[in-house]
Image (cartoon, rainbow, N blue to C red):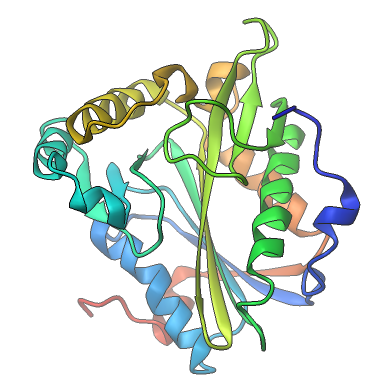
Amino acid sequence: MGTEPVPSSAVASWPAAAAGTLGWVRQRESLGAAEDLDYGLRMLQAAKQGRLEPTVRLYRPAPTVAFGQRDTHLPGFAEAAARCRALGFEPLVRKAGGRAAAYHEGCLVVDHVQTEADAIAASRHRFAFFGELLASALREAGVIAAMGEIPGEYCPGEFSVHGVSAFDGGHRVKLVGTAQRVVSGAWLFSSVIVVEDSAPLREVLVQSYDALGLEWDPRTAGAADDLISGVDVAAVEQAVLKAYMDYWQPEESEFRSLVEIVPPSDS
């Protein structure tokens, strides 16, 4: 894959992109690895039931390795989970497909939940739209970034976002992984942006993929601050907000207002 942005015609092909107001909620503290992962699905159900308007929730996650369903069927899955725990990462299994992905407090998770009459039909367009939106946000933050799978990346995906080193011969690293969950009349689009402190993520991925017996290139695991000095989660969060403002009208509110509509499972 090259490093040129996807043409605007491809991004604009999802007609629901310009969709009016949007709740913008910053979750200041993790609810715990498992509850953070589950909470997005609870938001999705609330949207399906008509209780939640279009909402984006942003948070910095606890150290987690989210395995795909296929990973659980491999002989080395129990060993992989044990190695994650030994490195301080909680092993979880997500509903979406793909392979193992790791994240921690140096990452930004963006969960976007919205109703849509025919949510299934536009699923591929959403992947392209949000992939380019997040690539543009990273470019706003100073990173050379583009959408597209790179050879040997962990949890490979056509619509993942990579960054390009300006100094290391154009070396590319994966910076954003995306996943989508669709139900009748609503969807959840979840993105993990790796911004800071890639070393622990790379190590836990090396251990996990080794135990699972899966091949990949550890050099594809990196963070935005490996490519541009000084970039942090706060800067990337502001860039994401700016990118969203090209299509929606974000209205910020406190996380407690979201909790009143969608209580955590332990409430």
